[in-house]
Length: 554
Image (cartoon, rainbow, N blue to C red; front, side, top):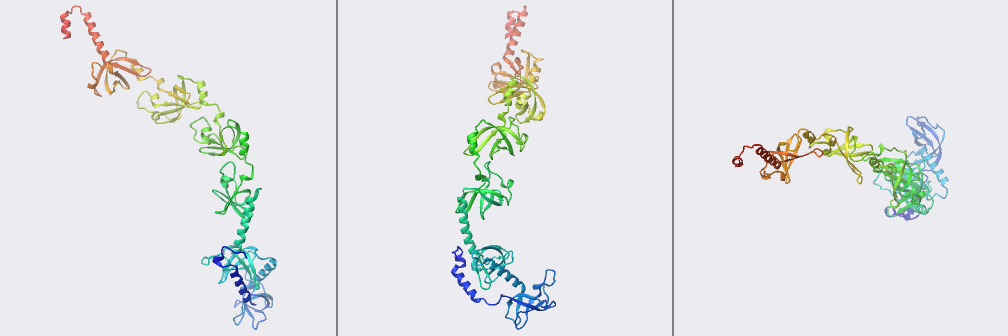
């Protein structure tokens, strides 16, 4: 027997040889099958009395010859095979059931013949005694496993546990002795030989899926288990194995490595077929248009099948020129056939990116062909923000800032509009480089200055309240929503340092700019106007003397 790694814990083969020799010497006539006949059946005592050529009839429990429904399999004077299980008492005890079991053992021994050693059987522990464990296989054949050969911890309960063991001996009393230690030795050697054969194989191997996990699946090839990592299932990339396979499926795999330290064999499914990326490298270029099938849709994009176990990735930003797309399923569905343009091939990373929108006319370019700055058109409020609103015009959005939407100050689009509203706007700027369109609504409305200009003109005298004082001048409020600027040079003869916010000030209108909604007022001009009026008054009064004029001046 080959030395085992368990020898230090459970003894070596010399120990077992000594034990087996001692057991052979202890064999006696007990537990041998003998034929007797039933002398008497006493149902009241629950006993059967059997003549086995002893001085007195042997006793056997009546349950030994009862059917499941309680009827008897034998009657008085029938012949019956039994085993003497106790002969120390005045009346020996016999068992018919044990005779049947020993008959199965004898048939098994006959079937095994001379080449029984190292035959592997699977059996269940049904009993433990001082010497070891009693096992029974699915055919009802019993085996004995000595403690030294069990590789089991005695303090743990093992009843009911199924084990694979090797037959190591057949005793004269027809006891079949098995060893779990020996099975480990043989199994380890067989596994190492099998692993080596699998690693050396150049052809795909037939396996069976034993277990599927989130990180891959365990596959059994000729009794040797290996892991197929989820990245080794398809050239498309990582695959969820539970979506494609189920436990018990037959599958072709190829060994790609063995970790001696972890004793782990690695398999690959995709290695059983030719690498399709070689075809991509030779036949596909950036800019090519190809027909693909949408295979999977995620929130960030879609995966497309090229039809040769390769997937390309279509990012959400490459699906449409519409920048407001929220999810790819607004445009695509699984199984849909589409034509895309290849925009990136990374052979090293095995990544291919495609675009759908590049094969569609750019909406911005089409817009520029149709419209120009100054055009007035209708749109729909698409999105409202704190700084304004995006207005959808055909397939593109233009930006309407708050200050371009209202003449009034501190008014926001989101407070006065709602998404879906129709709105008339004017294009004030088209930035072709940044693909931006700026819109205005207020230019289509009468400005406060427009309304003001209908009743006021340049050189009209006005009064206002000082709203703000700047380095370059003073802002005054003339009417509701109508402000005017008095530039620093137009303040004379007043001094800016003497002015206060909230104070009243008087001047004349010097400029009305309706297009830009601006008004300028001048105190200096008012003073000139007053001076001119005085001179005109003097010229018209012919009777006034030089002394009168001097007195007026003084």
